Image (cartoon, rainbow, N blue to C red; front, side, top):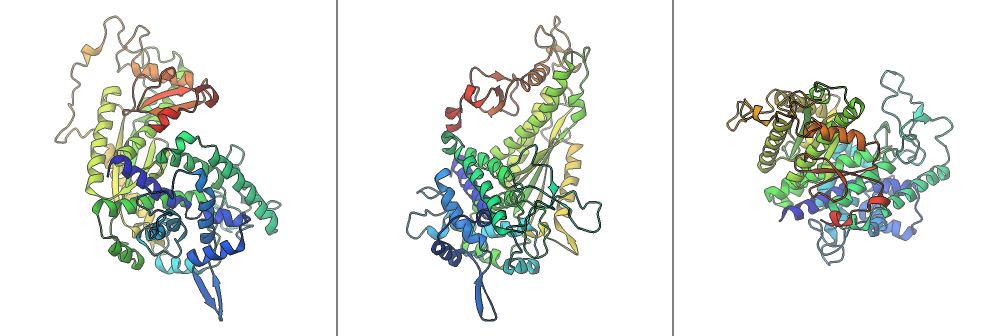
Length: 535
């Protein structure tokens, strides 16, 4: 399998993870679907229970997942055609059980290997232990139409656990990030509550339709669009409303975690060429929940203060542009570093859980090949920072193996907290050895030809006294790029990160980890870059 084929296959698994609970969105919107179709999908995807002789289906959102994916399929890349590995083709006899739609919808009634991959990722992301999850899998929701998402912050210092605020069921925007009073907003009327969901659903469909066709032809790029669109319209939807769960986790956050975990679990078995029948039994019986299948990779930008506030003979020159450019450059480096790791591992962008404040977290399969690749990428980061920051700053990578049980929390066990503590400890060690100067293939402790790099006419960079000026404006290449960023950020609307330079755009001189950074105007002015997207 080529790198491109592996990335595409991983992207399909990620999408199945993202879509597994789309039925919650669709069911709460009360989409106008024929009852016969609903009944068929309930039989296929919903667990059946019996109480006092009465049989009934639970988790009806799973049935709506199957129907919702079918509705949205025409706005997505080909998900049902001939080449949809690792899933089976919906159009081929004998392969439908392994289709992407079935893998997404059958997470409460899994049977096949791929269905159990999504179901296991769902359970791990929820952090349930077995007893709790069995209750979760058989519980009926409270009024999930009317319940709106609680805020995370309100109960930090409160003991009564009574939440007064909710997030409005509106697309993500600078206005909607602020919670509002529940009283007067959280209606006690199912029809009004469903109508609010339906409005949001129609906006979500429009968002998908607006993804350029040329981008739709590249599944990993389209998946990145889908991630943004999904976040915009599901950041405010409570993921869980059943039994006593506090509905303060969004559908987006839960499904994002499921997507990343599903890819990590699938790639672990795929790369090891495991027997899928045996793996299915182990997942079903939870015999493998202590097996370290996952690798959490964290990156951290060290020396941010040195990078942002590097001094020079004339550090006040263009101070506002320089500070703005350097601050943005920190985010840019973290973003490009994460992209470099993802690209080297052939993982989709959705395997990155978070990227903020110079740090990022990626979920990967725990294989020897993964660790070997990450070590090579770390060396590339070291080389870049030694060349352009002279060791004053750097970006370190740390990784920690994880089993499914490492994510489980209970009254007696803080699984995920302990896992992250171990990862942070490794990151601290990486911080003090991130150039590996005592390693076997260590970089020289003294920069060769450093003094010769200075031009006698241009001298030292005016805003960074460690770097040589490289032009008559007496600025180093990095300083000039940072000032240019500070200028372009307020003039241009769009940023392109690419392996190819596009003519006619404002471009940084120095590639960041082999990525070219370019700024451009509005989409109408600059076009949709369909040619680059297709590549």
